[in-house]
Length: 476
Image (cartoon, rainbow, N blue to C red; front, top):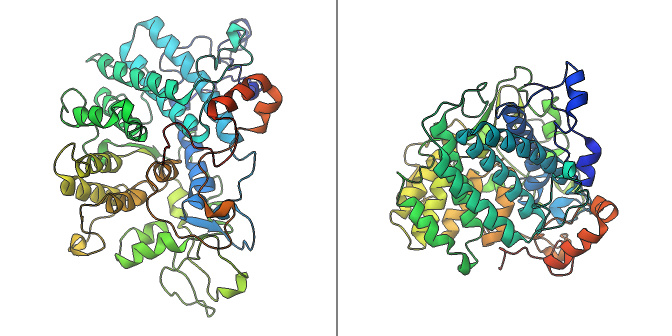
């Protein structure tokens, strides 16, 4: 992958200067790209967005969703819903940086009249913007990444409009894919396999429709059923091998986001909620994800976590709790973007709600695929376990989906906000009245750099830039 010229100041101000906005300087410098093709930016976008998302899963989602927690941690901490005002700054800047590059890719595809690359650009755009708006609510989109047009301070769009735009883009992208080859350098996600890119587009389409399904006026469930019942028109992932999983090779520049894998588990312990369910099920994913706990004599005592938001001193835990298995982030490794398991759980929910059939089949497929993506297998008799057997409830689907979404950027948290599931334990040491945050605050830089539009964005949100302000699709 070649170096892409990106203007840092433009990112911070959300001016979105594209990486080719200064062609004269670029042409004078042989180390910079002199001409953008539709494929030039594809691998840098995939790698950098996926790497950032993996990092945020470990730093934010794991704490909020009781996968892990910092330890020792007597007071405060995100696992106690102690949310800093700047917690979203990194994602804000990172997403807009690469959205500027996606915009360049889209323009290059349009100029080349290459519909496959245009469809891919629309898909990547929807992937990034959906995460961005689900984190914050209203965000700049229509005027974002347009610094070269003189739009230095972009206005905010409503989340409803953002979703309408992204869903239309994904619909259009699905219709664009054709039999023409993707002629530029092989991409690191699907190796220029047009069929897999189309399945990614439609699988993402299903994710986003489900996200807004609590808004009945969107007709999201009906559209989801239409897609599920017409696989020839809307092909989606049909196996773990087809999934959007970035295979990090460990060969420069496709390297683990953790330069020091040991940092992944430094000062971190597994949370009891996450570990206890897997123990109850005798689940083969445990050794892939976690290490064994040790007693004071350094003997293995199985997989034992620590309660999230625990009350009282650290000394109450007379054992060394389980932590992460660093093999997960050691080259070579996987970064999960959107998997077949998630698609099957979407279909399971559709069936549970009565829109399609075969809920148990889709549920079992989802559980099986969730193990496959971690390179394990379903043990004999696993589905005979009462805690695993499908019982017709959404609660059972969402608990298993929680494990299928392990290490998938912010998706566990987004789905919890949509459904309130799985039921997570609370403690008296939790802040915010033990209420799960409903969003992240806008980055402080927006108040400084784009104050007028920031204020209008807050009004679109309902008047309060607060972690308890629900976004448009979150009507629980």
